[in-house]
Amino acid sequence: AQSVAQPEDQVNVAEGNPLTVKCTYSVSGNPYLFWYVQYPNRGLQFLLKYITGDNLVKGSYGFEAEFNKSQTSFHLKKPSALVSDSALYFCAVRDLGAGNNRKLIWGLGTSLAVNP
Amino acid sequence: DAGVIQSPRHEVTEMGQEVTLRCKPISGHDYLFWYRQTMMRGLELLIYFNNNVPIDDSGMPEDRFSAKMPNASFSTLKIQPSEPRDSAVYFCASSILGLAGSSYEQYFGPGTRLTVT
Image (cartoon, rainbow over all chains, first blue to last red):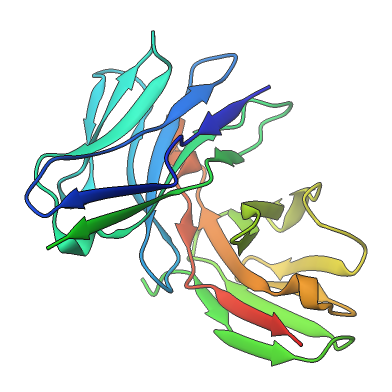
């Protein structure tokens, strides 16, 4: 079965320090992987995606993510965290189920708190 | 572009009442998704449409829930009768068929916070 796991419910980091939000996946074919961010009382916003090519992908707001096929991971990273990065982060993978569907399989989210 | 528009932003209703949530997708987008978000269950896909046609409604909890998309610029999610356990934030999202992974980039509305008392 296809799945996405975000092993940490919450991540705390000090402002200015590097941050990592973890994601692992399980799919039967080539994964399309995504990160979204949700700020309080807002809808989800697309951050970045991996489809093919370079394993390191860069996205909005200085975020990047590294695709690691051997470890089936797609961790979200940022070199220097900002207080304004505090939000809920979702990892997702395309559903390779039957048909030409456009569904995403979502992780449960990781709450990132950046402390001043 | 105004993005995905949802109304109302907040809805408080009594158990047993009918609730209708509305969504206007981004112009030109041909996929529309309805999600429900709760603390307990996270983000759940309820139903999605392609070119106004429902493709997968396997996430619709029960017959009390129904969704329609009469045209490319409007969709509704209706709950009748509503129950307290339906309290959640309901999101609408849209996407457009494109190359490779771009089809899977979903653009979310601000959500409707539903409280059923």
